[in-house]
Amino acid sequence: KKYNSTEIQKFLYNMCVENDIRIQIKNLFDRRNINPISHPGGVQDYYKPISKAEYNDYKEKVGNCIKIIISKQQR
Image 1 (cartoon, helix red, strand yellow):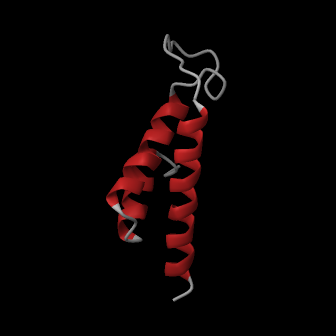
Image 2 (cartoon, one colour; image 1 turned 60 degrees about the vertical axis):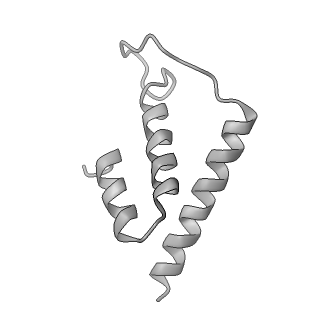
Image 3 (cartoon, one colour; image 1 turned 45 degrees about the vertical axis):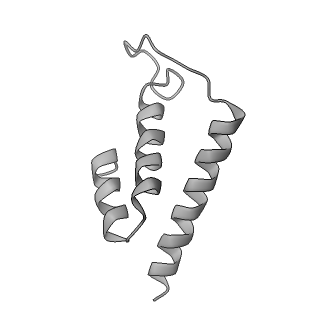
């Protein structure tokens, strides 16, 4: 039930994930939440395909975030 952007942001903050990464993760959640594929039948009028550059940026930030979390968990 707590799998939402706000709770994820709190978790990432507590894991000492840098602010720029947390912002990118929030943007990824927000973007997913307006996507008609992820949320069919919604009233979203806006859908913008992701560019290759955006994809690579998200991939890098998520990868860095995962590395930070894993390193914190191993301590």
